[in-house]
Length: 405
Image (cartoon, rainbow, N blue to C red; front, side):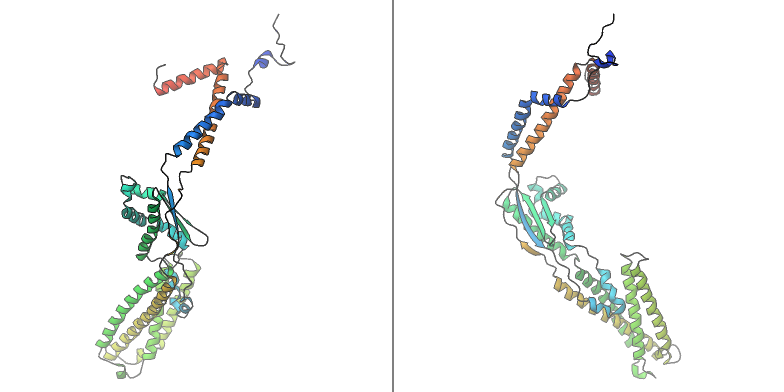
């Protein structure tokens, strides 16, 4: 007579009734925690106390903080006057296009030029015990933090073991930043000033050459049968406007797409100026003042027109250069220090309480995971199938590690 399992339910086979239950029970987990409660409590506390003791052995770090205001960009005083110059109105815009000054100066603080200057100034390769200058630069970046507030003020913090040295480094950042600004065009007015200064010098050289050629003709305006000065001057101004418009379009193509509305509008203005030039040259009495080519008066008219053209360009660029200088003086290219870094009285690191709490929580989590894994392995060892699988896993690991079976 076959044995009957008294625990088997109606309709359930004996094999199903004796199958092991693989589900994790909450009561089993609580039982595991209760069995290892002393380890789970005393272990993390011991680790936390040890971490707290070790934190007293760590050399304290001090953070010196300073705040400064980067040069602010103001609305250009030349904006309204540029409109009166026609095609020159977009040259200042072509030379600008700066983004948020605070974000830009945050990038300057992390630049290799500033970092290398700081490394050499304070001999940080020896102080940080670095093998290479690049390593000292990375350590300096780690010890430096700069944040820009909504008010535009940049807060700079530098960490070091010596509080006075940390304050000195924080203040030196502004000096090195000012040195870098001295050789860069940072603000919109500075960019316009450099742009128009170059164009003004080129126009001045062309004007001097045109004046020399005009004097070489040996003919003055009184020798002409008619006085073409007014008409010649008008044509020269139109030519100067066309040249300025072409310069403007060349600058705009550096940062705008060819099919952008700004490019199309500038092209329309350029075509309008060219049409005006053709009409003016057709109606120019200076072109018919003297008959026959190669005469002195003929040469004089051509060179006088070129002289007036160069003179007009020089006047336009000179006006814009002076306006840019005025705007540059208004903006101020110097950094305004709001708070000078002082030697901190309290250390910023290590934070002993934070270290102890983090170490305690990490140890508690690790021990909890350990007791759960240990209990699971103990339960698996009681099951023949699971035990054979564990033995196979051990053999595989030993083979992988090259150990003897």
